[in-house]
Length: 433
Image (tube, rainbow, N blue to C red; front, side, top):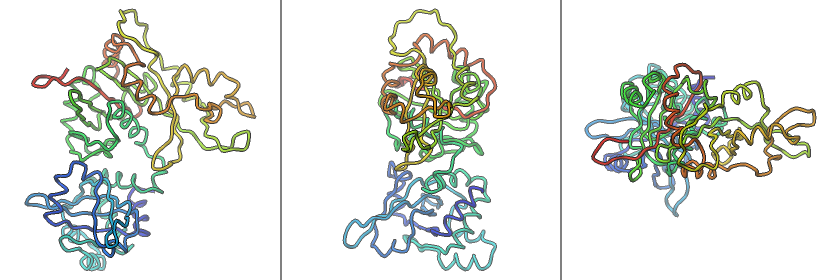
């Protein structure tokens, strides 16, 4: 089932909402730091009473002397006083055409055009469409390749559809892990997000973005060794905090996954350490005592990935401290979404090998599995892992990190998504380190 079909079926049950902001609302939104990520509107109860949420909404914003349309998700409405309700809207992403009237002109079906004309809101007003018209407009928007990224973001915000495996899920989670290790909240707005047109990137969920293929490739080529793989870069986001800068790159089919067997590489130039993470999904199953458990069953792919998790011998001078020099970790994630998030735990490669060799890893029929219940809390939580990365207590030594950069530059081919997070000091008034 295509992305457009999934959303179209959704809005047939919970119809599309049209919103046309006046100049004052538009200016407030444009000046709001987090407005395009999380927007709230307070109106009398009757304005929102017919809205069935969560659902997709299409907003027309006045931007200077022109208009721009945005696709977003209206997630909830809440009574805030005797007379008023608050509507919450998330993830505004630009779409074409740039106005609701131009959208109406693109509707070829005569009946649908009349229906839309009757339901077009005036400036400053809201309207809810019929199920059939809602579905028709989603398919119309999906005809434009430029709108696909915005539709993907909208799809990711619909709760029942969120459970469906998404090709960028691990990449999105890796991005949030990199942000957290840098000391940023998940809803922080980056200084800049640039995506490759037509590419698939977890960065599409973060902030407003531009489509600039050349910027991504030129910028990536400035990193040591990345001139050889710049064509695989799909997105870049820049965050700044005091005197530090975090640059996150997303990429497809990079060679590093094939060489190292990982999904996320966090390179902390401030502390001089590298940490690498492979993602695995936990499936819900019944445990031996009859309770529900979460398990991962090792397969040939896992064995192949572990075999690739090897660092070259290092004989240089070490001047920094690490609790654990081995940079390889596994993040096990419950497939089911709980409270809008995926619950997870992290173990080191050494710990995983010990788990797989222990009697507790064998099921009643002798099969090997990683059991959430059997671990009984003996693992790293998300916050534990983030603290260790930020402090530089785990990962490669600084001298090893420099040596690995040379190796990375020699790799050419690969076959999976990878996230690269480069953290470094910012030299004000000069070049970055």
